[in-house]
Amino acid sequence: MRILLFLFFFGSLSMSSQILSEWDRAKLKDEILADRFNNLLPSLMDRADIDMWLVISREYNEDPVMRTMLPARWLNARRRTILVFYRDKTNNTIEKLAVARYDVGENISSAWDKEKQPDQWARLVEIIRERNPRKIGINISKHFGIADGLVHTDYTELKEALPDDLERKLVSAEKLAIGWIETRTEKEMELYNTLVEVTHNIIAEAFSEKVITPGTTTTDDVVWWMRQKVTDMGLETWFHPTVDIQRSSEALKSHIYSFTKGDKSKVILPGDLLHCDFGITYIGLNTDCQQHAYVLKEGEDEVPKYLRKAFADGNRVQDIFTANFKTGRSGNEILLKSLSEGREAGLRPAIYTHPLGTYGHSSGPTIGMWDSQGGVPVRGDYPLYPNTVYAIELNTTVTIDEWQKDVRIMLEEAGFYGEDGFRYVNGRQEAIIAIPSD
Image (cartoon, rainbow, N blue to C red; front, side, top):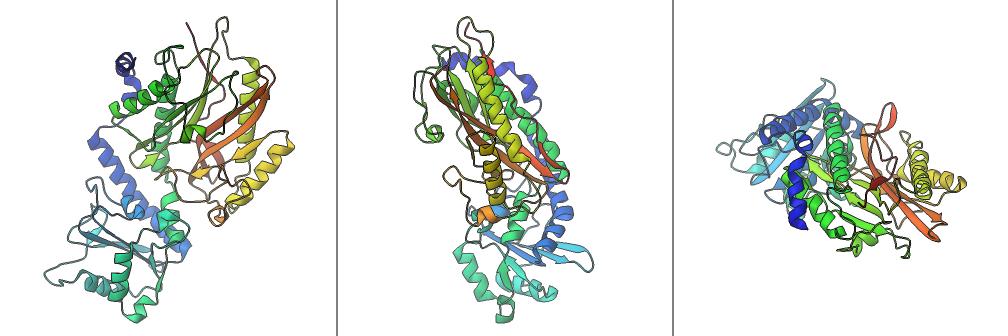
């Protein structure tokens, strides 16, 4: 079966043609990075009220923030790399310096001549003294892991190197780091549209007769087809895909079943309601998508009406939820309001949406977790800002009389919240995919 599936990989040139060469990817990545440094970072530093930001890492132990700042030709930090961003709001300037032996790409200039000043930490102190910032932000955070990238050794050595008057200026750069990670630019959103389209196309091909032969193909066959497809396209998955089954003859399992035990190597049969969870990484951005398909039984030429109605309830939950996206509302406020409105509409929703972008499970407001439907302390209290992307992840449980049991419609789509409100990055699934059995 896997050999047959492999033959299908060469039939989707249209998807592959959307993927840039390595050189073009590098060029675009560096263009996006320059735009972010020059046009986004100053406003983020002003919003966080931090005029100097230190991002410090050693090779192969990179701060998650630093990973997003490295140019295309830098796959890792080198030796110890210290990045210094200094924002002079009065003169509307931003300096991007590296206390390192090399320029960090074209955006960040080396500010350390080791022959003149052998001590890297001493050179950092000189740079700070020359600029006399009010606050020095460092990446330490109790509740946001991506914003907590300053490791113990670097933190200790930094404090030992700083005179007392400069050490007193150290503050957490938590809000600045989150802002940098969560905020998307226009250039990035142009790229995001393509990335989500590719994601949808891969799912559509996986959930088709090209890949699935009912009675023969297993869920694991489809999962590994997706993995191989992504690899052959020169992309990566940021998590292992899953494919699971709901069917009339089996009891409904927890929605996290596919993430724990899963329907591994389960043969797909006519009448099955399939569900996948799948996401890819491309030029520093990630997707996260869950969709449904139905395997037509003999004599059926469309998805049964009762399943179409159940799926429409999933779309209704999405609509209720995304209508509550308002700047300044916390993740918990959006969660509780949406759940209340969904229940009032006679639905049985669960919402567990996360920021999406530079990382798959990214930084920003957490809007519910599958096991925290009453709100998420601290991370759920973070406010919604514009120009951010989310994995609109949720489900609703629907009783199907024809099956004499409940089914769960589980959906996830990339959504963008901007100055003009909410929109899906590249549409959403609005109908269950039908897979022929012939």
